[in-house]
Image (cartoon, rainbow, N blue to C red; front, side, top):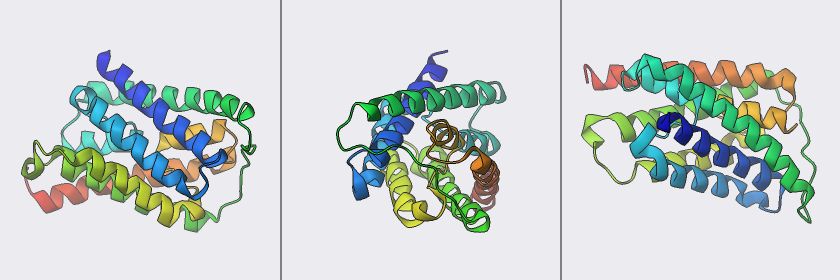
Length: 210
C-alpha cells in the first residue's frame, strides 16, 4: 500500500503542476516547472515505489523485469487516480489565480500527435530504464535529474505538436481539466503504451540478458 500511495502522490503533484503551470503565469517556463517537479518527486519516492508516476513507464519497467506483475494494475490505478484528482484541484486553483487562463482544448494533427507522443514517451522510458534499472548505472545519484530533464526537453521540443503528455495519467488529467479534447485521448494512450513496449524491448536488445 505504501508504494501505491507514493505513486498517487507523485503523479498528483506532476499533473497539478502541469495544469497550473501551463494555464497559470509560468508561460514558456512551464516545461521547466514540469521537469523539475518530476525530478524532485522521483528523488522523494524512488526508494519506495521506483517513482514511475506514469502507466507507460510501469509497463516498460514490468516488461524489463523490474516490476512485479501484481503491482502493475495497482500502480496504474494509483497513477490515474492521482492524475484525475490533480486535474480537478488544478482547475479550481486556476479560478483563484489572477492572470490565469481558462483551460482550452486545442486541435491536434492525429499523425503528428501520435508520432510526437510516441517519440517523447520512448525517450522517457528509455532514460528511466537505463538510469533507474540498469546494472551499469546502479546506485547513481543522477537518475531523477536525467528523467526530469528528459520530460522538460521533450515538452519544449514536442509539446506544441501533441500537448506533450508522454504519460497516460497526464492524458487523463489534461482531459479532465479540459486542456485536451476527450476525443484525442486515444492518441495518447496508443502512442504512450506502444512507446513503453518499444523502449522495453529496445533496452533488452541493447543490454542482452541483463
